[in-house]
Amino acid sequence: MFTLSDVWGFIWACLIIYPLVVMIHETGHTFFTLLFGGRTKISLGRGRKLFDVGIVEIYTLYFLDSALQYTDLKWSNRLTHFLVHIGGILFNIGAVLLLNYLILEGYMENKQVYHQFSYFSVWFATYAAIPVDYGDEKYSDGMSAYLVLKHKKFPQLMN
Image (cartoon, rainbow, N blue to C red; front, side, top):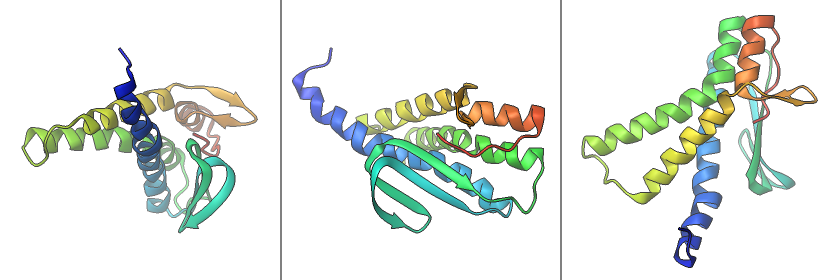
């Protein structure tokens, strides 16, 4: 049951944990883009632009949306683009596996915040993997990966 005492945990999860999960996801895409010779620009949020930090643009509603644009890859083929498009999913799942390992091996204590992080990470990776065409040539990571493998089409990433 959700009670008044849960409000701060909910706010913490929505304003801190979830954006962290999104940033890890975008870092996964960025990792593979850079690995294969491309360049990226990450946008976190919607609304008025607040500031830039390197390749990341932060908007007022930073917790609401994300997008990644990448340039042509130096090594451009189906495999490299496929890895770019599923890189976010791999990093989200990898972060949960690493966190579980660190807790199980006693390097970190098991805390509620890690449960929230793991929940949001698995949730985000799962929904990103579902192949969805949002219209206007915007696709989920799963649909993008499918288009890369099946049709050799390399769409931009809009999470």
